[in-house]
Image 1: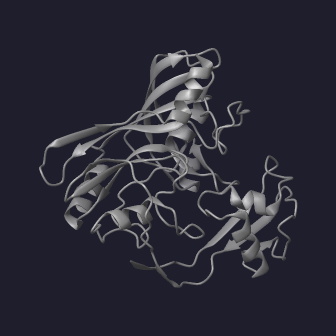
Image 2 (image 1 turned 45 degrees about the vertical axis):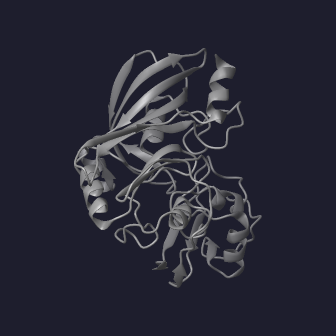
Length: 317
């Protein structure tokens, strides 16, 4: 499958919390870029990355208020390769395929990350995927963060794509997650309704935008709705079931952190020491339900926690 990679510019202003990191280390941690340190080094050598509008070395220690600009190279034609990557298929028919995505797998190709994704694996497994959507996302109607495991559905036909996208827009798709957070939540259940937008200083992060007219007017944000229910409390942690009606970037991670209970292992919104050495947040898309595009009947799917996350619950029990 051939697609056109759009040219794009990314700009980041360094906060006091971020200062002291190596330039290549900082940029490699930014999810929207999905660049490895070696790829960042090559971009620096080719003058695609500048600090305060000047060339910089990969080892440069970033400072507060530094302005870092990253330019993705000009458009080029890309062939998305099908790759023989094992898939944990939960359900499949002529219209859709539901997969239990593992932690560490990117959902779809993006600049700096064109192989090893779920889309690469789907292209190898499926005879066809829906042609609609972004060029690098055939069949993809929603996504999971790289280190979030669990259920994701892809459309194999254009009709199925239209149906699933409409259901997502109408907020009728049922999505349930399991998360382990720092701290002991007192309430048995709760609802978080808080707008989410790009952080005004740290542009690779999302943040809650307070519900004031001036702040909403001056910041691009979108409404977000998250509900949670406590499954089990531990000494310093709480296991919760989370449901979302909206699908904003990093929504669960941002909302729970805003509430004062960041996800265990979250490198971006955690802010706490991770004693389990977990690579990425403790978040699993456990249940997924929607109207089947072909039959018109509701279908629901469920999957267990990955063994890596189960071990953590065993340790703190």
